[in-house]
Length: 608
Image (cartoon, rainbow, N blue to C red):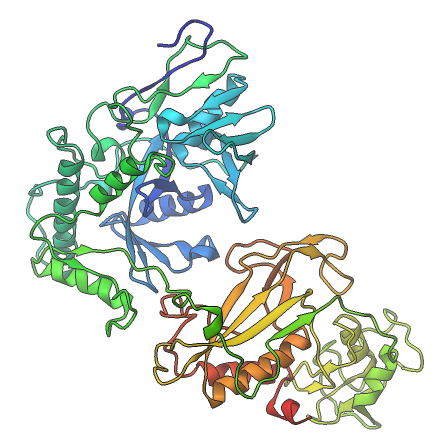
């Protein structure tokens, strides 16, 4: 207990399930590579609960509620999350909290990461911070829970006690997590031993049961290694079943802190230097952190490890197929431990400056773009007239821009007041022959980049020189003495794009507003052969025309007003192809040539 007036201590209580007749907040969590249980969002948890009610043995497609989780599926029978494109499997659990706690109120505490985006705390830490906030404590010390941080509520900041670095902190309201009452569904139960009753003998049940048995053996062995002599038998995989008695989440000791005083967190029930299992251990001393990771990575004796994919990326078996192979081995009565999917090999081995050479046949090693200069050019009406031929007797068909008949006036009549263009005039584009109202083409041009070019909305044929809205930056390219997978006889062309953050211009979505540039400099790779050098030359043209990047919303993070790729795919993995952005990919060079052509960048450009 803390001294009177000096703050409050947190004692550890069991993280078991509340009585069956008490309402509980349900939070679904997944185990990351650091051994921390990370919560799904409230919306995802509601989705999982809805599927659980319909079919307690089914699977949950997370992409149905969150597009960023499209590759992931949760198998409720085995309580694992499966990533379909890599074969990675991670345990999940269904955890329960008090309805009056942060998740029951829809309160989320987050810290600002190095990418200036927000990361939510683990649920136990979120609840601890919210408890201190509600009691009006000015600060919170999390060091005994495995975090060497101080939380200051007055400045809404988090400070690292070792480095003194501060990060911003925020508290936001979100959807409340789902509420439940009654017994835990049988699908959440993982018996450590023989199951009761007569098992079903159908192939599907045999597969699931043998997978579950192998997983139980692995988990039990890992628990024995982590806590010898302290592991209890449990009927559930989630919650405190993974930990010995007395090692649950922290609970506030009532009456030990007064308002206006700081709050200290003590890991009662743990030995010296121990934190709460499952919480962040990245700020613990290196020896403790290494020991913890080693214990988690240990494979039980006699259980073969099946890597999801070879580290060099040359395995003949697709990673997803490797994951299914592990399940089938379990079905045959062979215990197996699926290892983590390897990280992508993004960069080549270090290269000395003397080994970096210019690309043969390509002049220079760098290109820079500056802010777009708004040149005085022809009026929009002149641009439209340049590329069309007037049609005196148009056919009785739809204009695919305004969807009105070509024999009638444009749907933009009264919206635009152009000089010399009447609403009933129809024109035919010179190359492709598609017909539109002149007023519709004018409206389309005014809604675009206004760079003097037109693009047919039907066939995408480009008239003039198309330019983009890429912000200022630098493109470097050179040769390095390493080979890409699939091109062992060639060296590698490395392209380095670097775009700093800045302010959006008049051609961007939100002029005058700041835009971010995440992940720069970005390294991309091409094989040093005839076709690879051709692609490089065309990419340089696309860069000069500001077509490589644009400002928009990231498909990966959902962040808006940030620099994103602009429909010309690049290979950013050097020595692997785990994400689809690496080699070998025999069709990539042809595909990117087609993408460049769609932007108006063709081989004819190089001859001009």
